[in-house]
Length: 128
Image (cartoon, rainbow, N blue to C red):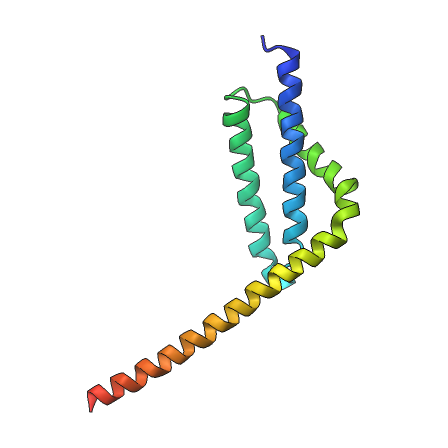
């Protein structure tokens, strides 16, 4: 039989992991609708990784429904309390990060276009 103190500590760890998932969800919510499937995929991968870590790392294979409920409770607690207060700051930060990556992606696209044009000219010159 598992001691109740150990069960409670595992439940609290599950709540903390759920709060971290809530924070990740807030960061991913700034993606535009056209990339919503991408952000949902990232969230599902993170949820799977957290579930595996909780089930086999923290709980050492002792899987109980209360741990999944702890993940969900932590997620809801984050969204309803601290996440609600920090949401404007999170959105500003996430938008800034998105803008930085968008500009880097634009620069990379221009560079690859210029490189492809250069390669076409070289191959056309060699062909002659």
